[in-house]
Structures are given as C-alpha cells and as structure tokens.
Image (cartoon, rainbow, N blue to C red; front, side, top):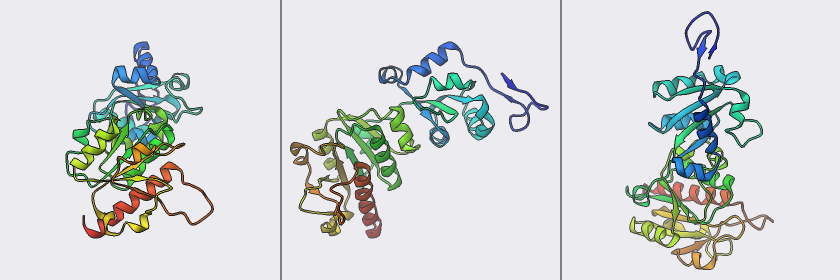
Length: 282
C-alpha cells in the first residue's frame, strides 16, 4: 500500500509499506500470550524509544508494524528497519490495537527475539554490580528495576523462579528500551544464582527494611563488587531467602513513610553501589 504523492521517496511525498498477511498478523497477535511467547521465542515491543533500542541491537527485530496515520512520524524507525533488512508493515488502527494491551497504542510495534541469556553468559565477564529479583510479580516494578539497573551501570539482572515474565508487554514498556541493554537471566534458582554470583567474585547483600545495618554503615564495603537481592513487592524476602545472603541491609528512612516501593529501593541501592565503585576506581 502507498501513501501517494509526487515522488517515490520515503522521505518526500510517497511512502510505500507492505501489508501483513493474515498469518503474520495472527502470529504477532499471539505474542500477547506468554504461552505463545515461549513457543515462538519472540515478544512484542511497543513505543518509539523501545523500538529504537530494539533496532539498535543487531539481529533482534524480526518485524516492524507502523500504523498508517503514524507512519511519517516514524520515518527514522522505518529507515533503520529497512537498513537492517527488517520487514516493515503498514497496518490500520484496528489491526495495531489487536497487538497491544494498552488503551491507546503508540503507533509502532516491533516483534523481537527473546533477550534472556544463561547465567554463565551474564556473569562471565568479572561483573561489579548485579541485581537479583526474587519473586518479583508486578510487571511495572520489574521493568523499572531493569531500567534502574541499566541507568546505574549494572552488569546483569537475574530473575528468580516465580518472577514475572520479562517479555510481558508491561515489563517491556516499563523498561523503556533498557531490556535490550544488559544481560537478563530468567528462571533462576535463588540459591544457585547467589552461589554463582559469589563464584564470580560478588558479595551478596539482601535488602530488608528491618535490617540493623543501613547503607550508611557499609563504608568501604560499598565499593566492592556486589549483587543486590530485591524481594517481592508485598512480602519482601522470606527469612530463608534473606539467610542466603551475606548480609541484610536497610535503606535509611527519615520521614514518616514505613517503607519504599521496590523499584525506588532498588534505585537507591544500585546508585549508592555504583557511585562508591566509581569514586574508588573499583
């Protein structure tokens, strides 16, 4: 199909995009379901920034869908996709909506290969900072923790067994493209994962609002390579999981709030570690 004009030039008055077949649409819609994501080894990426980051990861994107009335706003993404030989399809508002779980889809959706890696791959290059998510169930929190890990230079994110699917559309949106920037391991047995962290030279600290030690007490230890273990949004870390860590640490609170949101606590801990490591040259 063509948005007609005077010249056969994507950047001028004419824009030519293919229309997807029913099979392509059906396969892509199916990726809203976790069962289909696992079966296909692919997931949906929605929004300009997330799609841009996906396209920058070589070989990651398999298809790009652009809503016709948003096509000219996304010429850069269309161009990047074509440079990488990624098929680009023009779709109606109705068809794009069937690939999104949002009320108002942003106009561009990509299909990308799953991004998870093995534990050995994630910890194989002398990591300095890792975040371990233990039974994190909320997609928004999981995506935000991934974004924080990316922002503060973490080397990897480990997602324990029973955590949310990182390829869930809500996780992907909350990460705002960071899901493509650093290694992420899924389905990790917590004990085995923490043993692997220690084997990679990391100390293991668990966040616990009731811990006697706070970030202010850690001193020079903050600069050492560290794996931070973050617990579930509702119940935190069970006692048996806290005991798997080398130490439990609390974020000091000075106001009247009883606790912090999981993603906020993760941001503070990761920022504090990253800043200490860089200040001491570790």
